[in-house]
Image (cartoon, rainbow, N blue to C red; front, side, top):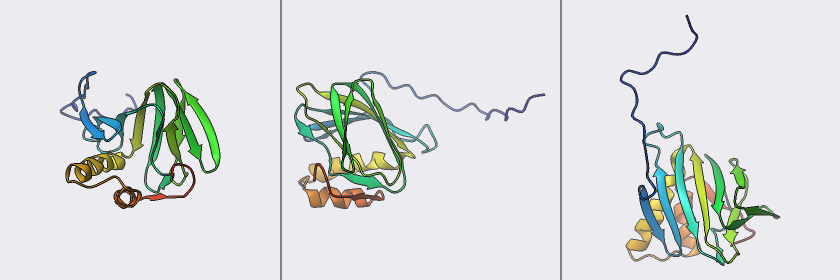
Length: 163
């Protein structure tokens, strides 16, 4: 006898995303590749690969009310600003941002920045799709437009770096 819960029947499907797979979203200079949109995880987790070109600012400093966000720097180097505190984040660095923490990031370096970005739960994956739809509909990624899209996902700008 074991205390392990019974396995679901039938067994859940396993997702496999190859190097060329996922949903690619081009947002001007940034490229987002959705690796897990929450479909496989019961919406508990979303995962994206974010590529930011050299010498590029990130989003306005903001905070999320309803999800944790994680960033793992795969290559290049990021600078994260959390409130007024600046953190260097070279390749191999993990940054975990709990709900309510003001944050932004940038790529001030000479190499592209590639990060794996997690959202727990997956709420924020749709934010990137909404930005894509706004751009493809002829809209511009102005601070006001980005703020409006952020507000759909319990996210608000906080002032500070990158605004």
